[in-house]
Length: 305
Image (tube, rainbow, N blue to C red; front, side, top):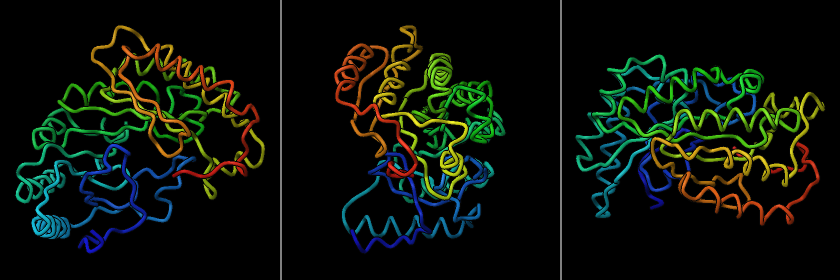
């Protein structure tokens, strides 16, 4: 499909689970764009695209896919936190989606705690009714100290409120946690507070990615100056993964689909929580003797955006 007619404004990112989705850029960049660890959208100025452009993209995609006797089951709205766009605009986008792909199962989107809380329950319910009902939320950490340090823009309590709010409005929630974000110094706090939020919010999906300092970001600059964090070793990263999993409660409101399939992770893990918790912990335990205990540095890691 090298003749695919849509022209994306790079760089373009999507969650691993959206690999087979049709990507539609409804916004460009990230409205927050201040997280110190993130280099994904630093070359872009946040912009909401014109609805006419989006309609045209959808029409071109439909015509192309029809010629190839294909039809998407899922669409993913790019870029960084497209849920921050006005609700009326998103509803117009969804009307255009349904006009071109009436049999679509769902639409997914990146979200922040901030733009979930800024929308009313009726707005979120209206979007869900139009099949925009899968939100990918970068929790990153449950520690207020870490969230403040990386300029996430939300407190831990706001992340809890946002998670429960969007789930109560008919959405599925995928929560993403960054292993090693607080370094050695804040590792214990990172593990305990992050597990606590997962237990309180019971997301439908839960995943890890490993923190890798991206050159040009404030987080990378902070680490190259040697303050205030020491990066984890591979073994310590596995210990964080194990510790958080071990603290996932048996009393979940729903089964949590757990995946570790981001490119930053050296070994994939998969299961359902809490049912497979002990098996996953055992798999990690088996890897601990094989993992390096040499602390990483910004110069000996491969950046993963």
